[in-house]
Length: 347
Image (cartoon, rainbow, N blue to C red):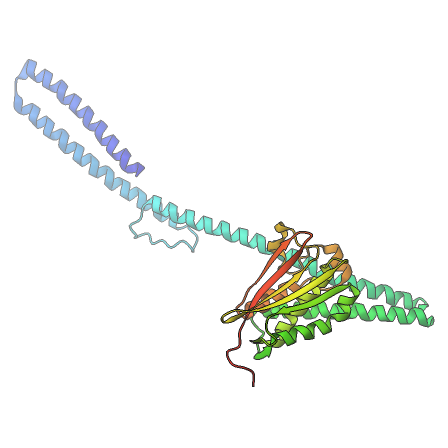
């Protein structure tokens, strides 16, 4: 558009100059020649020159712009679609290049974010593995230096080695599970089962852990039997992770973990509620990330892989459900999700 404006301005200036010459010639003609045809002919010549000038400049502009576009096309990235014969302006090509540049900036930001996530992920994995490995190394070295001869020390250290090995196995298993879940490599084995019975079984499984933390486990439901259709083994893992996590973060005095089951129209709402330390509002968006811990020092001291909530999230997403969390810091937290209500009773 700038070239067209330049074309118009140059043509106008040239015409103005020509009109000034006509005016000067008219004065001379009136004073010396007194011939009206000469003035009209000169004026017609000016108009013709103006029109020719406009089109000549337009042709030159088109030639110049196409030549420039061809030169530019040689250095354009392959991702920018452009044909030299295409009827396109420099402005339109500039817009395409601007869009391409913005796309690359976005891709670079995503790559930086992924690289940052990769470094954080590797750092977290190494940290989680390092703790039990160093413990095993320390106990084994102590035993090799002569402590193996003392039966009390030997048994105690071997027991601690076993605990550390079990923690390593748990971390590796959780990593394997979450990687397979994210890759969609785990198939769900749907079945119909009573969710209240499953919750009571999980309570029995975690009874010693709850007793150690002086925590009361309670099921609240309006129906004795609630049938759902889901992968029972995977949902068991969901309950184990959520309830165990709630036990760890429950208050020492009057600690309580409540699991509610509420029948809706076609769904069953499940809520896991604790009166523990809660979660700060700014931390809520990150709690389902791999290895993310609300209180890292306390969690690592108590063990665990740091993948529990991430696994819960992916298992429920595989069931086409989501998990939500509500929390007030220092008052407790509530995790909620839904499962498909069974259409037919189990056979």
